[in-house]
Amino acid sequence: MSALTPAIRQKLLGVSTATLCTALFKRGLRNQFLQDVRPLNPNLPNMVGEAFTLRYIPAREDLNPITVFQDRAHPQRKAVEECPPGAVLVMDSRKDARAASAGSILVTRLMVRGAAGVVTDGGFRDSPEIAEMPFPAYHNRPSAPTNLTLHQALDINVPIGCGDVPVWPGDVVVGDREGVIVIPAGIAAEIADEAVEMTAFEDFVLEKVQGGRSILGLYPPTDPGTKAEFEVWRAQQGR
Image (cartoon, rainbow, N blue to C red; front, side, top):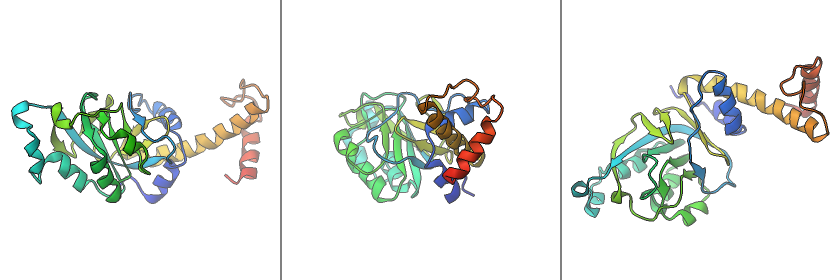
């Protein structure tokens, strides 16, 4: 059974990776935010989907001539064609952006097939074109050389590391304008619920701070009456 129900997906579409980081931190998970991975188009809504993974290893020249792409079972091509609708293709490129993990044609194919997004800790070629697409894509930096230059696609839908974060197939991946976070599948529902609660409270706090109120006693809510004040505000906001 999928860890990402429509209800959970809807909740995660409305919360930030920063809030999710805090919810995970409370549970002892301190290394879930991908390092040095950024959105190509920061103006898109949140990316939410289950992880479908691709693992690259360092390329060996005799095994990576350009002709390998003629093989219909080439792991990179196969991953693009098999990534399920609603999933996020997450690529382990060993944090090496000297050669591309993919380009605009493969990213377009993912978009057309209904994927929720694509993530690499390496780089994308054709990055200006990808940045204009209405499709969430995250990478380290632009990279024009073909992936065969340095990367050999090897495994599909196995546990990987991406941006120094362990990613298991089926983990819930959330991206926003700040970056990408990975939520273990087994706690996705409770993390989504808590993040929605935290977001509402932080919106309340921000409104009060913008009005000149001190954060002391407000954030965290240690002053008597703060929680009750929040509940009144929340009812007024319909949240």
